[in-house]
Length: 372
Image 1 (spheres, helix red, strand yellow):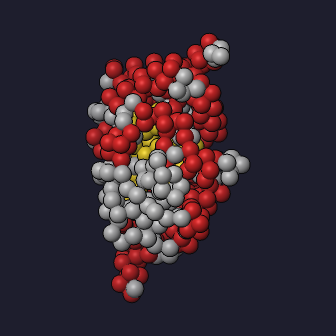
Image 2 (cartoon, rainbow, N blue to C red; image 1 turned 60 degrees about the vertical axis):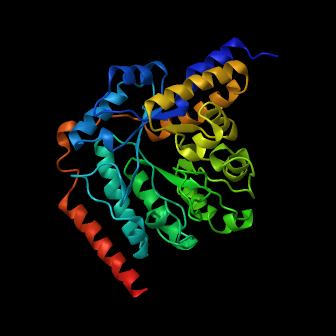
Image 3 (cartoon, rainbow, N blue to C red; image 1 turned 30 degrees about the vertical axis):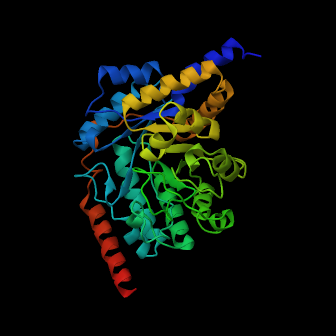
């Protein structure tokens, strides 16, 4: 029995809600603007290639929001600190997480998050893909390491929840990552498909706790890991696994967060599951939002999902339900919308007192680590 035409049409109209796309350049091209507007794309992710200075990025975010319909777009960035900070000078240089964790002070973690969120909010960013909720249990991990607050669940949980609160109070949505935990891997999902052979009981007692505590602190977004855990799902990595997303996030929680894929262009996905099939697998597994770092790949995935709707391999209800969840969070988290004030950024970004706080935390963290 075929679906009513109006339901199919609704799914096609709403499909763009489920995308966060990157693009090139310091301003929005006509082609990118048309894609955002016509496909009703839900959000964008900015990288260092999109950043020159605060006033430029504020103008860019205002330009992006001009493509919105009734709800604002997600405008996101990876702004963890340390090596993962897309906006450099004059933004405050954010201390690496392992040094913040070494202070063992949630109060200081909260202060760092406040500084980050205030600066991001000033230029029109409303989502930060931070904090890292991974626990650094594997010293040979090539991708997490100093990005994690520490190697114990207790320390990571309290620093993550403080960071979440610091963002939310200042009007930026944090996104905890990488569910169900990337800290025990020994390979990089940008390059290959990592495997973590850990029992569910271990995950529940260790890796999952920082995430669950972040959700209790009202974190609305969680990013999946492109890692394979054969004890959870022998076939699919977390991003494509309903056994992971449904059983560990959506079913246990009364109000689950939006589930965001890590970049769908990473080799852990593209080399094993294909650019055509992967977005459909992710949505069918329970992802609400798909990230593509390039506009070309986002366009390709968008077209492949339209075909999947027509073929019936992606059902209209899956798209509509994800869109409903996204719109509900946007309504509570992003409204009322007001544009970035381009001329008023000097007193908000790169303040000497902010950098002094970071330096104090860095020094304190290094002293604590030196003591062992």
